[in-house]
Length: 126
Image (cartoon, rainbow, N blue to C red; front, side, top):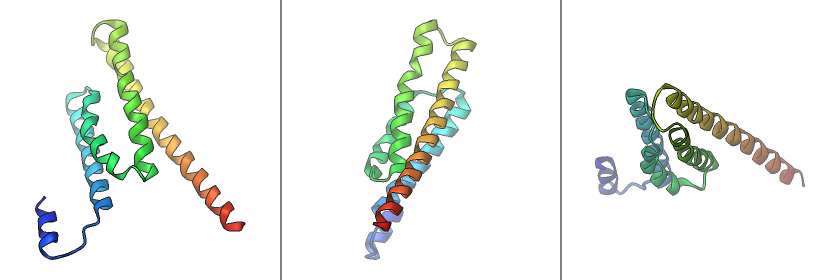
């Protein structure tokens, strides 16, 4: 916040897209650290990230992972509902869902990026 105040006093233009993108990335790092520290991912950790990710939703590399990881975040509760406790197998299933969410979001983002590039080159040729 201090940096934004400084920039506004100096009458410099603030690039809000970059600011919200950087904020989103810092919050993702915080979630990774919190999950690593506790060893347990909770879907409500994503609330802060989604708030800022929605402000840069025009960028596919933010929108796609935040959407997919949010959906998988809801699925994290299924192993607990099935087993009824958070013993070792439930934690392993939850971790597998989180890793699957990351893999799927990266794969879909890469495929979307390639598709977008192909469409852009096709339009250029026409």
